[in-house]
Length: 264
Image (tube, rainbow, N blue to C red):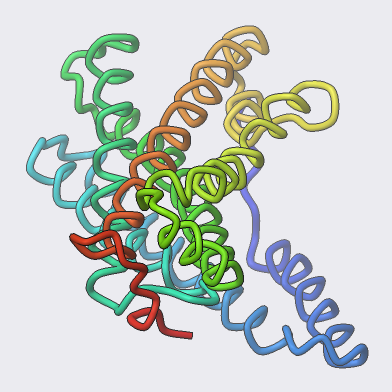
């Protein structure tokens, strides 16, 4: 069964729903209408552009092209990690931390999936590598952003308590153990909820796409289980890595709390 193509009119009808939501945001003074419309415009332009890039990439499979696209995706994801946090590190430091933690988690998990589990020939086949890495980066990005935001905001609110514990002789690791644990949990809760509700409350995107594309429901289910497990691992490793690196930047070598560098 072939996928029914969508016309510009079909997409326009869906876009009207977003515009209606923006009007409601303005009506109720939510202040989200501008960001909502800009995000919708960015989604349209970015997806149309990546569609053209992937069409060329799929026709000319090359490790160099796959790596180049992956680096672009990682660079943008690193920026988005800190873009909407309440209190964040200076631009380059925040970008470097987010990018490094996603590289350690998402890229390693994606490589294991492509080279060991799926084991296609070649292992970097773009039809598998790019969508898989995109799903990993997208979910890991959200988890890391949530965990870092929780970490910095809680430290800011409880800075006096943390400093008192430091004065009583505790190390930075001891004084912030519960805060770090809460931050990691915050980043991992969304994927845990998604896994718990998959199949009962929602049909995940990849599974739905494969079914619409004509794949066997059971084959789609197996790939979706694989993807959910990979996303959980990538998000968890990413959150743990990000909080560990962030903790090192918020304290100096003498275990003194350094929150003045955070920007709002």
